[in-house]
Length: 470
Image 1: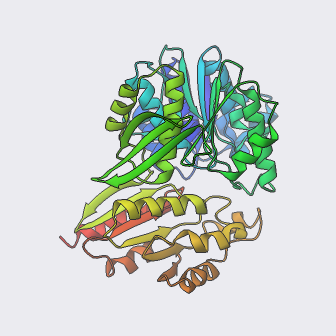
Image 2: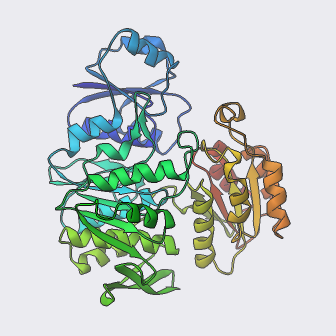
Image 3: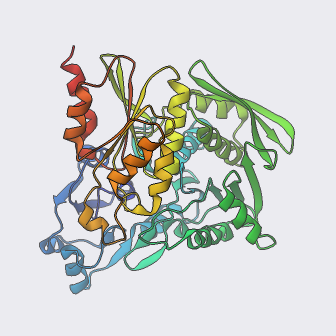
């Protein structure tokens, strides 16, 4: 078949494009404002990308149009597809029917940690001999891509709670037929489609209700909202529930955490009894919880403790998740996808553990639909506690942001951070930030750049600036 993907450079859509090509299908697509890593991945696969959304793109003969979840009514290409009554489907539908149905599916969900946890799970399953097919919302460095297609019975996927398409408003994770579902945590996010935390909890309860009797629901009870959803589902779930966390309330517990020698060590207990000892080069309590969820899923699929540890030893992380982009002139530049205040806080906390004696400069771009709104302003004022200096960029595309609610006031946010005793600055864009940091960065600094977009190529610009010093 010939699939044409509208919005092909989205993380899930680009991965689907590669998967369909691997299955022997012809794939084309269209997008605008493309940036790495997905644009680079598609280029490497030789998949044609049409720049911009134009009505004439519909002239390309295809069997099915896949409509990305960011594509809305009014998009000229979508409107032409509808006018011509061409067959169209959502990304989640195609993934389910082409790749999941009939397989053993692990779905990794939660507000935070989905991409990292899914990537760890894919690598543990690979080392454990399961040869999984997978789809992740980021480039898994062990595989060099965000997807893989095999002929095994095992499928691992990142389960997004965002809605599926303009014509299907349920979360994407509702399409993925979980045998095992991981729910790491639940917090309010996606203010453009969810009105409050209760509406999000409802959707996660629906995911939990999909898990079959011969499967597993793996739930992170460090999250109050997860605990509340589980309580509301008591007596209504027909599967085995495995809770995990760092507290004794969890069935599976991580204890005796030690951050040393550039590694994190922890002991795993099950029902209060010692179960195993593990270590990982990932930092932060949130990554311990990510690893715990994978340990439980791997055990359910028969992977040994030794193989789990071997995978932890060799796991290379994920692009844009605390990724070191370079160290020049003694300054380390880190790229991270964090955009929710909890993710910002956990990322900076983990960096503080890893670089305990270094000055950490946090650079944040409000770019996601929710981070551009005022809904999290008070939370952001607290989220930079573990940084030594904070720079907040101007809100990305304020005109678009205003269509979803009150736009974040960066000046007020910076004033709130400064009031907590932290040097904080607001600057309009990447170039202004690079100019400011050119005279500020010194040997030993760690510059943590956090954005869910390209951020004006700021990482390369910072590294170029540092290279000019040498």
